[in-house]
Image: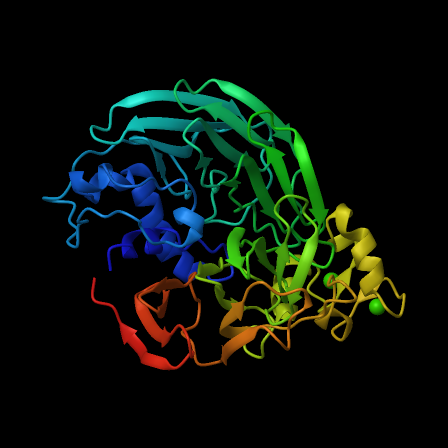
Amino acid sequence: MKSMSFYLKSAFRPLSHCREFVVMGTIMKCFAIIFSLCLFQLSILQAEDWPQFRGMNASGVSEATNPVPTEFSFEDKLLWKVELGDGIGSAVIASGRVFNTAMTGESTMGVFCHEAKTGKELWKTDVATGELPRITPPNSHASSTPATDGERVYVYFSTIGIVALDAKTGAEVWRHELPQPAFLMDWGAGWSPIVHEGKVIFAKDDDLTSYVLALDAKSGEELWKTDRPDMLAGYAIPVICTAGGRTDLVVAGSGKLKGYDPNTGKEIWTCNTLLRTVMTSPVVKDDHIYVAVQSYGDKSRTLKFALLQWLDTNQDGMLARDEMPKEFYKRFDASDKNKDKLIDEVEIETAFQHSENMVGGGNTIQAVRGGGTGDVTKTHLVWNIDNKSPSNLASPLVFSDRVHVVKSGGISSCFDAKSGEEVWGLSLIHI
Ligand SMILES: [Ca+2]
Ligand SMILES: [Ca+2]
């Protein structure tokens, strides 16, 4: 289980699972402060790079061929440690250099480069963030994991957009400004860019203006941008899937797993089998895409109560227009079906959703075959497991034809990747 440490560190899911997130966040902040390589033996430092969130193609699996550690200890396995600051992004590695982000001041994000072997700081660049938006603890403003192609390091920050730094010097090469995200419940940003064939690709689903875009990695110039108007806030990282001789960019979001042409941004297919709020990332193995999601909107975790808890200032059980952030007035009006200037307990069940993408919550673990065209819901869903999975799922791990899922606290399940059959049910990982 060589990749499990990455898997656990990368299981970032903001807010709705506060208690679990505190546990995971504690682990991750610990790793952000005491940098993550500290637990690894020297052998991994010569292995393949770890260039983005959850490593190569967000798989959570190391491609290292050298032996990697299977025992972890802060007492006798610690190689080096450095203090960074508040942050929950993961480290990335390229050419023996380790890149991290952390808040280094009230309105300053630091991007760090350390030598992987020694922990020596090679450079540190502070980026001014300006005034910061409200976010829900324990999310951090430094929530994004950088991506790198070895030449540059690409970092997203919610008040700026995407900034590219020279990997050798830390000098800013370009920045591509983006509007700040909007959230109904102040969840805060948690998206990370990827690099694919000379493009920096970034998917951002918030509650107002969701999109996926591609920038030229050298110049920061926008190559394409595709709106995702039927999405609500979600945190999946884009993944690449090659199937049937075609390579697609796959993005998970509200109710839908979608495939795009990575060269043009054109939507190629949609599989309408997901849930309302997607906080995890898909994983690709061969030509299959695996997704594990738990979402608000089921019977025990209705969105109604979450919205009311967050927004119903006068506690009358309904949402009034002036209880909304202003940017949501238009969505509010669309949700107020009887035009009485209130969203009542019936209207709230579907409030703020896109009229053509009303989708509920629950639990699902599923496999979707890539390579399709158009609506593949009935043709490419290979297997789908409802309501049998551990709650508060992290992103899955697919290894040796098995799909592993885990929730914080170490409750794990394992399924056969081809059939979806359970290999083992809810079990506690002893770590
Ligand atoms: Ca109210
Ligand atoms: Ca109404």
